[in-house]
Length: 75
Image (tube, rainbow, N blue to C red):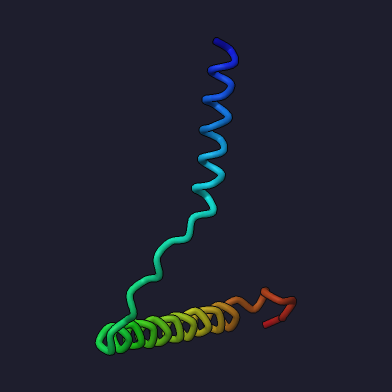
């Protein structure tokens, strides 16, 4: 009985290893509409990140100017 269970377990492990090396089919090619939509989405995200960075920098400058004790400055 133990030999049968051992052979079944070994077969399952061998099958799992073999299945892990299987190749997936190639994804379908993108259409021009999908490519432009993706480019627009990337541009919008980049613009939003730039705007957020500008806001964060403005906030840091305002905080720096408001607090003279920061960075060992004296008023």
